[in-house]
Image 1: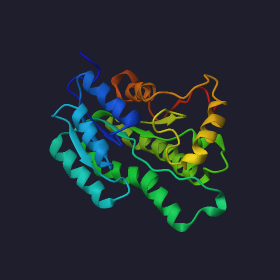
Image 2: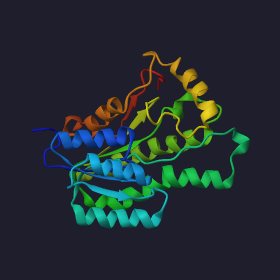
Image 3: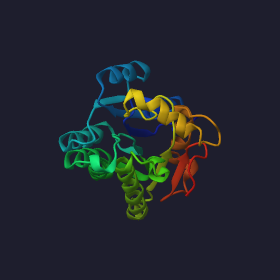
Length: 246
């Protein structure tokens, strides 16, 4: 029997990368998963990899309509023992390039989205459940081109600390995952011509000298989602090869 035997876990942004790696491992450890995504091809691929009992939904973290629909779908599917809010969006640019539209776009996806998702899903969380939200090492890197993205991911860390206090009376834990350079989705939001140069620059600062794998990030996420981390709440766990120190 695995750590997730008979448990139900929802992973938003679960159709690729560490989200999908986490879903596959939860299933392998006896659990049931619900995942969300936006890309049709990734949704279909995930459908082919996960058991037929899995709930696979097209859902946009920036859409209030989709968030409300997700809350209803999970209510019908079953109560949750784990909730990993992993979906998000990213853009880069110098500070003077930030516009009201780009600000709203990233804040809606990365801050407003998980805030409203938790509000919609809180009633579906079992006592003793675990909530995990994905942040980013960008919060601590101080990169010149990521101020807006880093700000949204810094807000995530702040709100999860408050969630940890608010949910504690129900025995529900809340923590933050802080991934650094992870393969498959590492800086995928950057233009192709500049991405390799930027990745090389970051990797050269990683003490372990390489990017992490989705499976390595998912392993830490699943620790936090499982009862193995029953006395861990309000914390942030870096999976970054030693890139940042805080």
